[in-house]
Length: 344
Image (cartoon, rainbow, N blue to C red; front, side, top):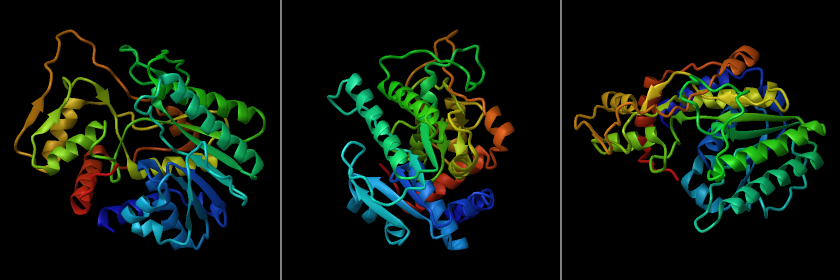
């Protein structure tokens, strides 16, 4: 394991000391365990298990356990990880008690699938998991939603607070499926199940794919190839990035201490535009071949923003961004170099 990842796991462990005793001996059901978010939850739980002999077990739902085990042998060998084959619609319900359920699967619209079918499929998957939680003795259900539920951020709104009602985007099946799933979570909470909703924004760090629609991942990919850094737009969209280890801390603390049916933004509130991000990656990663732009900026056009307010998480749960963006980029770059990773 690379030094940076060990450092990250110790960082998570140190900032979640009050969480781990609650999880001792528990069964945790995880969807999305083979993705970016799920990988960090798995790694950090196993680290805490080793440090404290928690004997907590993670049951991971995945369509292809063999492929994941071949790629992530360190997790596959752990006796504290069990894989359940299937998807949200077809998996067989476990017979054991599930003390915690974390729904972190990201289901995007499949090729040829219309948006209404995609929304319905995602909602039915969430509904099935909520029903499972009701019948399996679940103490807390953590749902990883998305900042996409807010729709387009108004230019006049500097940071999106949780009470912002959002803008309706019927063509965005991903956002609509997240909204629908949040509604189901809220209804389940009204019936007595503790359901914590985490609205995730943008992140940086190991395990983030380099070949998908993540600007910082694409820039690190270009840097690893020696450059140039390719900006697909005009560089004006504004984003913010929370480091992956901090993300894991936030999610574990939300699982333990989040208020039921009360959504929390999860991300950084430190805004940066995409062109500035590209220059930052180039500088940190030692790229000398410059930046290439796909489009020229239209004078007078308002930049598109995607930046959360994290005041609720800070004031109510004491959460904060510990690792700055520059350091996060450095760790991500070095980790991908060592692992030659183009993760799906």
